[in-house]
Length: 325
Image 1 (cartoon, rainbow, N blue to C red):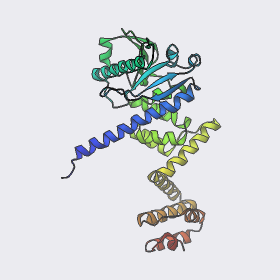
Image 2 (cartoon, rainbow, N blue to C red):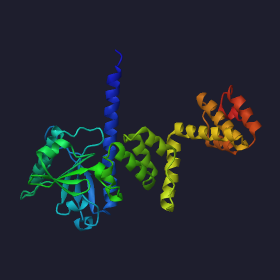
Image 3 (cartoon, rainbow, N blue to C red):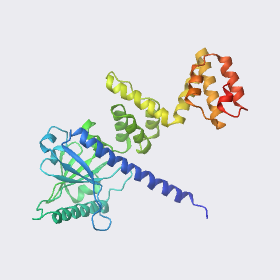
Image 4 (cartoon, helix red, strand yellow):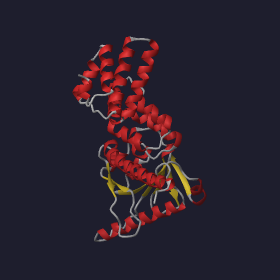
């Protein structure tokens, strides 16, 4: 029986959302240690012995005194040795059911901590809820105290209950773990800001999984704003190389744009670029793979007649080597 388009879309959506959630958790794990200089660490939460109550993770506070100089909400963790974290990414539901489930997971973790110790632990487990925005319904049922842009204390509550609205947070390096939960235009702003500041592999996965606008994604795929900072510029070049290596379609678009520009200018260089691009397209569409040696041979050829001859040969050759003979 054929699979309906609706079912295919649902499967695609859940696969993509799962990868996005994992990307957020990996970012929290890697960035927390870096931005806090080891003062806090992320741990994947173990599954609690209750149905559907496994949290996203928790922050283990290792050196609380070093969190004081960081942007909020980091200093709020200083009085605790651990805080449960719930991550809601762009597109996730943030309704009363989700909040109640988060509170259930917080309570389950608190019970687990009590059972782990003898004598029992007598503390209250903090809950940090990270989401793109603060939902309007929460304002009507809870007392909210804003203590920093994007950071709210939720009350009344016997334990620390923080709501971190990622869309409202400032663009700060130490806040990247929270900023990945942004949505809409704030997400686009974050993506443009963070791209030249992170390693190429991280940016590549961000472009794959985060639901930014198509025009922002295309802008970041094709170019990143230059910077006077040598370190930032070096990262920009690394990102471009990674994107070209992993995205042949992006590389082909860039080549074609260069071809079009060169041909319009009527330059010999433009004609050479066009001939190389045409040769590669024919070989690719015929399934004739290029080795690194053959790639270098094409790039190193500056004779238009030779490139055109190779192009003619590529139409009927049995291999790339034969085409470039």
